Length: 308
Image 1: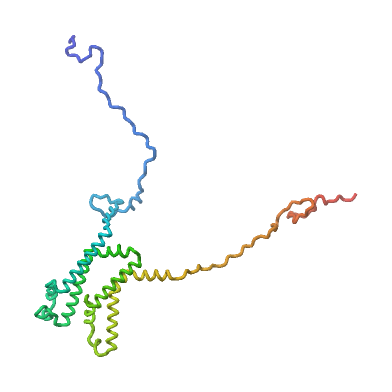
Image 2: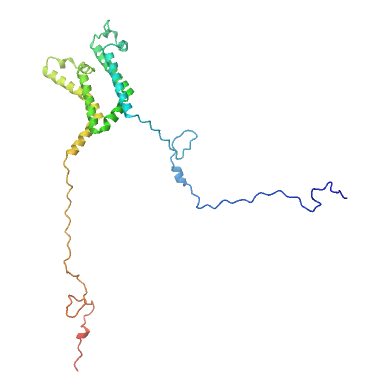
């Protein structure tokens, strides 16, 4: 039955086939590697890799902490000016406290000591214990003032950069000047220390015996001086400087003389080896002729025929 092309597919009568969808493109192979693949570490090496403690989420195998960022270097002028300003402020506060312009500074001391030690007016000390406590309290206040302003002005860094940076001699000289200043302040009573030390001495040692009193007094002077000088000696590195100067003043030592080398015997000129074969020349006699080790025979030219 002829449908006259009503229900037929498109182009079936013309003899053309239905076009098929295009297939996938042919696969493209990657290029060949130029070298063999790298091999990983062995099991023993992998187990020996350090694994330090780290925060969660951080791969610990071969982990190394990030180096700390260096602080920005303060300019020398800024550092020195800050140290000088803090030193002037320290002297000002110390002077105000010493001259009584800062009130109620004895209140913490009277709260932690017996009331019988102090008088009714201005809290004047009445006993030896009160005198010792007051001297120790003053010494602590001075130490707190110096420490606070020293940290505020960064005195250690200023000393290291401005004084110690000029060499060992400048470092020792700066430490010597500081020790001398502190010793003068203690000796004059500006910084409590002399009276505090002598207040702990037993009374019979400072009695009528002048010899014992003199020995004890100068011994205490030496101890106070040693306590003041010792920290500055460590700061100025006096021992290293002394050893350096001592090594520099020694004369150079000659190297240790070893055994004299043996004289080398040179062969005499014209000497010949013991077994040296020479060529016989006409008109010249050989010095030595090597003979065979076998039975001795006469030369062929010396053999005479037997008589006929």
